[in-house]
Length: 116
Image (cartoon, rainbow, N blue to C red; front, side, top):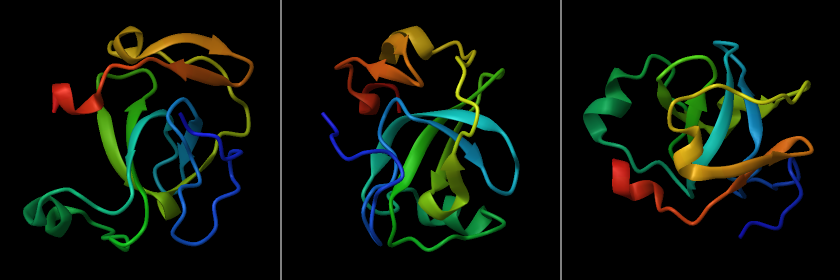
């Protein structure tokens, strides 16, 4: 699926993979990467309404927010590796991940696009 070690992406390369635990740099929430886009693929109106407007030409991640029903769409430079990886709570977790092994989740084959 995704073989690059976490945190080893060069500029423009994905630093995180589905199953990685992350923390948002500005807002501090813990999250779980579900899917990624090589570059921004949201709508123009959503981008314009985003307070920070990170660069579009970088990987963007669909992230389950721990302890909530929220899923966010965050730019790579807005995220960092979670320093204390632990399981998260999210109602859609079981639909996309089969288990928690070591410090990451194991992603199943269900396409993310089906729920969008």
